[in-house]
Image 1 (cartoon, rainbow, N blue to C red):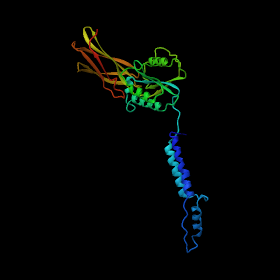
Image 2: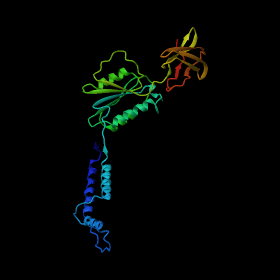
Image 3: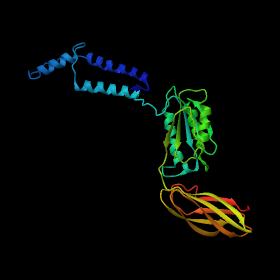
Length: 311
């Protein structure tokens, strides 16, 4: 156990003062009592009233001493320091992709991840250093090798969620650059695991740990929306992905210049992708907008826009 305010122990001087007051209590006045029934009690009171006599332990004295000890301990603020999940030199990679906007945890995955990092910052020891990397399409260093909790908190506040993918390979490469010339580095990746798969096996000079945020919830997404001119006709193409563990049938709306063209339903097996086509569209169409009609924890990938044209 440690004391956050050890100087407050100086107030413990009140304990011997209480005892001294009990030793120095003034004598009672002598009076003639007509009965002998109170002699024994009166003798005890007289002995306790004489200065520097043997101390009598009374309930009141015990209560006063306990109260004094309790007050001193409150002022000294005793605390037990638990070891932080991270120690030494740590690089935290915070996933900031579109999937982190899912609301299966309150208020969303990204804010829940930031809250976890804030707790880690609060638990940093005097010899710990922390670096923060935001991971989206292009990773960004928010702060490098800092011990200052205020600066770390300010850097964390600057992290913003995006509508992009999360490129783990680039983020780990950036972490490797930060770790150059330093020893005993560890990397902690915080996110929901929806990241771009590395296109090659990575050999890293540090251990990597993963802290998952969120649950494995069903999700259907529009991956792409584009237009083509086929046989002289303008058509729209949408690619849909089913990230659920079961088959999903999802209606998809297409709007051309803000007007509903039609609604098509696509059925996809678990983990599968598929495509829908609309056409022919009016040759004067300028903007396309596709929207999924689905209920899941992440809605940011339910819509897509495109400029009409192409060949």
